[in-house]
Length: 274
Picture 1 (cartoon, rainbow, N blue to C red):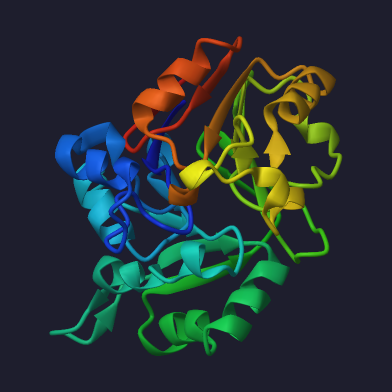
Picture 2: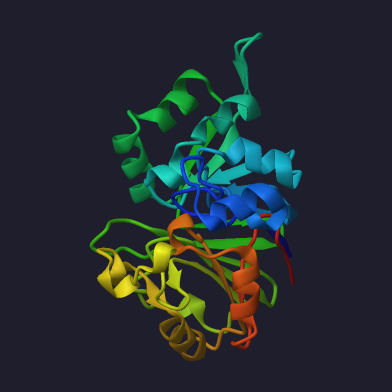
């Protein structure tokens, strides 16, 4: 099984075009792994993309993702949905006015949420342009790949965690709104948990402290993630959805990785092979 982090950023890309902080300036100079586009992942075995941030077209081009047969969106938030127009070049021929639908796979509750926030956009793509076919489901098997879509529903709403398995290999993709981490037996003995919104050391951009931020209760600490790792006997943690306001560069995260066993920080283009 092979996966690729297409985008490892969060709400704001790095570099943020409206920011001149040291992290953004360094990213402008060094580019490559110092840049971060919006959060998304690609399952290469089945050509499936999960999530469509605004810059998903740019991200796919950078990472060489040239074929998408299946698409899923984890939840309704703009940094995961605003690039869903990607389905137009994928499945609609505007010259011939003909659609060739790709499979759109999502939890029923998430389909409803996305349509409510985006003016029934998914129905427009399915019923008018015919470039997607909506599959409301919590499980799908494509070839040897099995995917369970788990609703980590909290006070913030519906959120999909993906449990992706191929025979004895298992990856959990829990990109956003991860706290609280609602129990599910499917999480036991995973090889990798790819998880978003984790506070690395509690220090944010400009020296501000997480403890003073209004979103402090939405982020796990690394210690809390380690507790989840041990509880579910997960072998490796990869942190993604790394935001500009965290105030750290790719090099900073390389240093932090050395302090922990089997915890790493994602970067755009990161390949995960099991």
